[in-house]
Image (tube, rainbow, N blue to C red):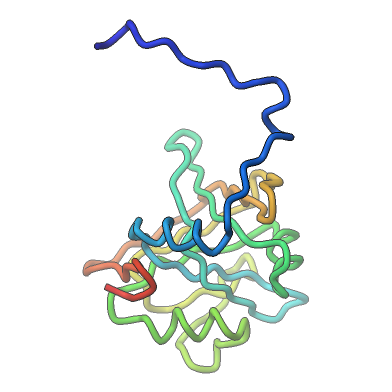
Length: 170
């Protein structure tokens, strides 16, 4: 019933109280939620760099904000955390090879058509949608950082997105 629910207040020491949760079991449970697949790109010392990410989400329409998260132990963490400009590419349903390529190798650009924007950010020529961003905020979030981008430009194609769920592409 609306208006009658009582909410439990978090204990003051809630951040120090942790139930043991297995990362592998949690990852498996989270895999039940289907996600779209993106490739995020930036320039590192003038060279193109890419990374696959399925942690993309909208944040705000005004101002136009989106977010994605990156694990701090990733070899490509530092350049993406420092990037003041980046682009997020939503992949088409038939781009699983592209997704896997950038998951393994940040310099996977030799296998795709791409170009630099005037801002110096490398972008993929074919994707379902692209969000060109300026870094708006960087938040610590456990073993990840949440990178919030202010969308400065976007493009959109037609088609179906690449979806990942339960360890497989749909």
